[in-house]
Image (tube, rainbow, N blue to C red; front, side, top):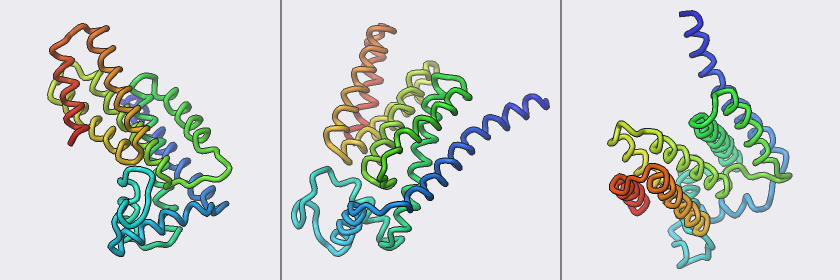
Length: 222
């Protein structure tokens, strides 16, 4: 019983450690610099909240999910940079813990934990960093899509749960597309091809493949 309790405590310790480290790292490092690009998001948010329309009243190169989210966030919490930086720290923690659970689907917990810490700190090691940038949102949804997709591929016996994971993975992939077109398109193609290889080439189950792919695509389209 004691060994079981220690094992459970260890399972909780790793994700808590990852979240704590990444959150405080983001809080500290975000305040070391102030890139001029930070003002872009606040400016777009003010335009949207004052009634301006994206693409009609001002130019924006990407799909609008990200700036609509920032507009919604600033409408509630205000336009101070500190609020957006706290959002960035939370997002950075979300990226790290999602990566951990993704790797945990493939590797032992301790390997997933060490790999996650190394990976996220390397990924975020630019000299100037905006933790609530649209790229960080894409990172989060890419990892979330992969995590849900992996869970679906490993969930053979519970069909309804499997289709739910695929549906949610499709929704998450669509969020990538709604943040940036090319990255979302590449992610969609990758997951479809992965499904083709896994279901047709490895399992060789055509009917199940069609059902699984349909669940993913329906989520993506909705």
